[in-house]
Amino acid sequence: MNKNGEIIVIEDDLDDQELFSEIFKALNVTNPISFFENGEIALDYLMQPGADPFIIFSDINLPKLNGFQLRERVFVNKELCKKCIPYIFFTTSASKEDVTNAYAFSAQGFFKKPGSYRELEEIIKVILDYWKKCYSPSDF
Image (cartoon, rainbow, N blue to C red; front, side, top):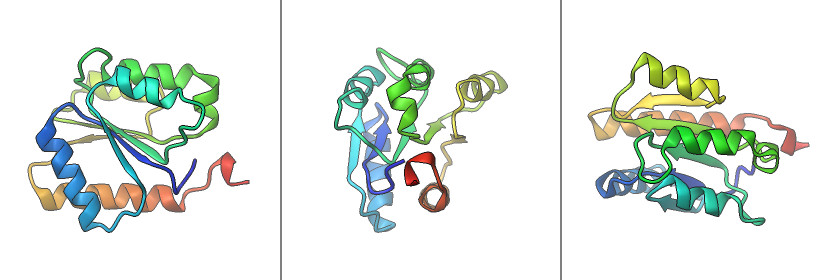
């Protein structure tokens, strides 16, 4: 896990992209931030040899390649798995089936998008703080 790498946000809603961007700025996040509007474009980016992101925040309901399909492709790709990129789902609804599917492919988190800016900011802060302190094989 490259703790100084990019934060990848895969979200097709422009308002949610703006909200994430504002929160990263408010939290003084120094990592570069990259937004992708669908899973297909994000996967193409992640497959590039130089791509070494810190963390992925992904919606489930995405055009072309949804969040579950993308997570599965990242999970089964040996080169991407070696990078130990935390994969966090953020979505508008949480069902037992969706949560089960997310963890079936070893997602590192599943969060329902809260209704308030403050609550979303708190969740993102906790997630980033946790992963910044967490060890991964790439730390050695």
